[in-house]
Length: 257
Image (tube, rainbow, N blue to C red; front, side, top):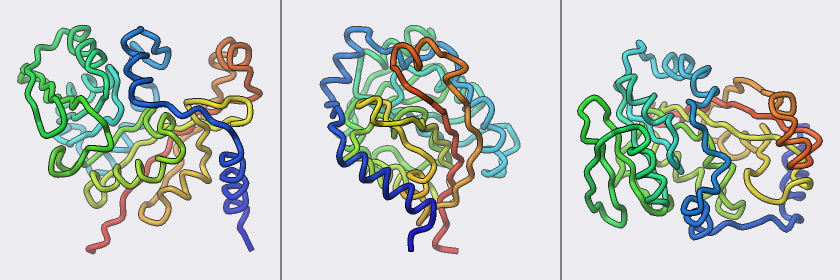
């Protein structure tokens, strides 16, 4: 018989399969950036990253001095990259929109150089105080040979934006880029998917368990009720009955030990 978590995940998968969800192409995301139609972009560092970073460092046995390799997939122009690099970390982003990448460097007043790396265009910060590289291209073309391996992945809006048929492939890709015992700090949302048929998709805790539970240890960090924080957006504009933001700290098993 199914456990309660297994039953909930089974019903979730059934619901997702039945819904006619919007499937976004790479062109769609590029057009959104070109038209400055990016309401998901934040001008401030993500609150989940700030609140959870100490837990990430503890999991990585860090001292707070940094020197971790951090991947930010589907990074857009997030200021989180500068915040992470300012802490002494080496930061790598992957983003399909060249406009988003240039906007990041220009808005943060960071100089950069441009080189071609395999199928990607690499925008590397030339300020020695900030170790940042952002690869422009299709995330699914990423490999460890191109990007290397990472101590930490910060997924603030990648998994929830990936088309559902590509979700398991995306998670497998992230894990292939993560070092053994590496940490994935993941932000997802939990709401009634029937009330909204497009991104950001609802990915409740049982689905996170289904995606990562076989190969990783998963700690649930927090739930934030976004209906209280921003009722205008989620209750009146999106017409949702509930909207929770979830934070998960996921550590990849070291199968060699």
